[in-house]
Length: 292
Length: 278
Image (cartoon, helix red, strand yellow):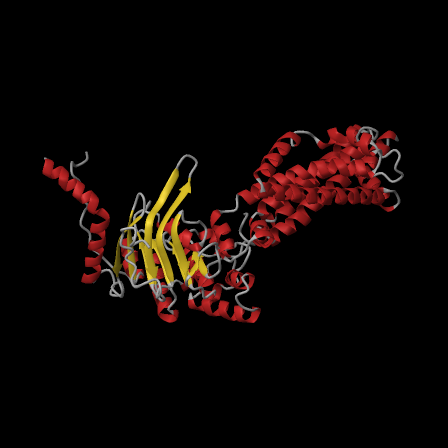
């Protein structure tokens, strides 16, 4: 039963001199080798990959149907063959070259759109309307139109890539600019910065996490769009891209080579994402504590 | 002149001797639905080496007033002049220290943050700037953290960087917008003492905004007491040195009570009237 008016029990006061904590301070036990290995993300991923390859190899050997589903070793062989003796490297370079042109054009256009959107209300409305319209439209759906306007060849591919990069980058950059805090803006103006130097030295670095996110999304869209577009044509151009390599080998029922082509698409995607963008991230937004 | 409009500006001395003179300034800003009058015909004068405090409850327009001095907004009426020249836009002769911790540029280290305004405003050359940056980083006791990015610092350290950054510019006047309001009570006391020590050292002029009576007396040499809705001057008081003895001193407490009475007088009167009626 509780008392009606409980009173805190009187206790003696005491004071302690701060104890030497040296002994506790350096009890930082190093983790065991096994624990440290298990902490490596890439190592865990590698283990999963190896398990998947093994499962694939076993299933495909049991299936014995190389036309539909070649074994992992067959695919690895095909990949080395296509890389060393075949056209895989050429095809990849063609794809990358087209991609870089399209990506660069997309970014320049996005910069122009964002400048317009930041400086005028009409520009803001124009950008948000266009983005809302074109974002749901898969870039590849514009390919027939592009072929009609620009014919078979690089310009058509660049057109669809620009379309897939432009809206993602412009929208993210604009959102990033809008999100720069009032305090940071006032701090920048306080130094007497105005116009272009103000944008270059305050707004762009402050909005960099968003800009980088936009560049990443833009890259992912562009790479997918490019491969898809190359599947559709490449017939006329002597040196097609990776998509064309996949399509060509499917026509010749070289299924292992189709898989090798798909692998290359994945590998390049991973490399750009986890090497290039990751390095940029580590050196900038993570170092600055703007992103965890 | 504010005095001509029938309200004592309370400014000590004529505008001739003043570094910053604010005369009959009315400030308005728009929200989505309203046109808000933040201050109504406020006037005061800040002299060189003043620690001038704008004190008042929230809604008295003291921060808006500071922004106007900073050049971030224009008065609808009245004039603001620094060293005889009208304030028209933000500029490096009036360095602001904000309340928010995100005022530092997160992509620059402490040293680069302090250097940046000196370099972009062309106030001094590279070597001179480096020298000053080091000196002021030392002054705020952050020498060990000079090459660290702001996100690794505590709130108090960030405010110290902001103060070093503003002071390194050696501006005509430092504008401080409740710089310690977001800090915990212990850190706030320490920072107030440090600020006073810095003032002893370099004798800068500052305009300091706060809503804490205690902070005003500790930090200020002159206190402008403002009443809210819209912000108007209630009194200008001399606080020189009274904060030094610490908040336990009799003079300190007398001043504190006096300001408290000013700010809450209307409410007290209203309450007395109610009592009289009853």
